[in-house]
Length: 423
Image (cartoon, rainbow, N blue to C red; front, side, top):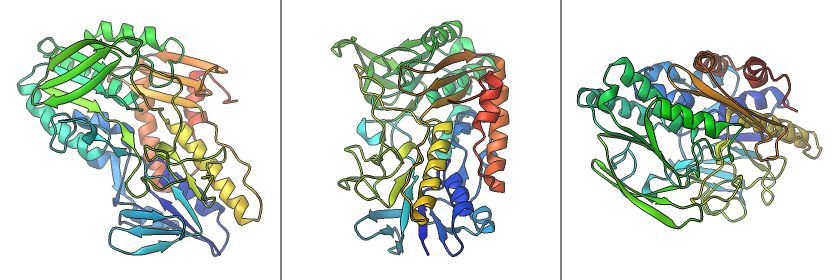
């Protein structure tokens, strides 16, 4: 019988565990390893950052829900994966043997690549983790009592731009509700070549719609921006031309700042030859399987995907929720095929689908496939997006508690958009 180990218990790891347990043979064992006892619904973190949500509304304890389904749970972080031995070494020295390993860790947040960046000894906030967002919310309380300039955005090498836009507009909405918006100049700083690029080369009229939204809310922006360092109340930014040459140096004052960092692979896998690329992301083939270590699969943000296009300032490629669910389902079917003595044949549908909340409205897009040219290239805005994301938050958290594993994006999102099929 086989031992399938899943490294990570987030938006990729939890569905992976549920689906794998359903497909496993009698006698097979599924184990989840995580450095946290809590599941967090990361897309809600921008709301946590302005106290529209409490931590306990967007998190829950993992163990009882997995164990109720017969899934083993180890709440100790992984120190190192040893693929040549089929072992995971844990932080407490324990060794876990596996027959199949699914890496679903998410990224390491590379705050250390820019001096003064991040919530750990730096001067900027983050909404990449619920604890970062919680810290941001404490500072938000102080900020609204003494308002001033805000700088928000994403640094060079960032790959998930949606939360930066969301947090900018959510803060703007909160400030208007408090009737202090007029006291807060806002600047959006991004490594994207233009507003609405999103690491995807734009989707539909994302550039026009997003620029219009930012002008309407009086948010200034700087694109092709490289953040060089951050000091208390000051951000140093070099704006570049389209050919990559420096254009202008900016020193931006701020009373409050949230900047998304670049991502890289976690320490447990970083630098393993044949398993990861130079940034530490897991190399996979069309079946989500590592070409060198064929009993290792990967899903989610930790997967290596090349940039959609060359840009003056380096960007990563985003992985949206539907894409991750598609990776999970393909991986489960492929491991099941291998357990049955067959070769893996399933392929994930690498499409980008996103709902981005702006506090009292929002934008949604569908890019099928993610890399142009596309069969569907759709972008829209409206108040329905805010309602849709709130509903999806409640649904997904409930889904992770009940253990229902079937993908739901097509039913809940695409139908609302009037798009019936993904293919």
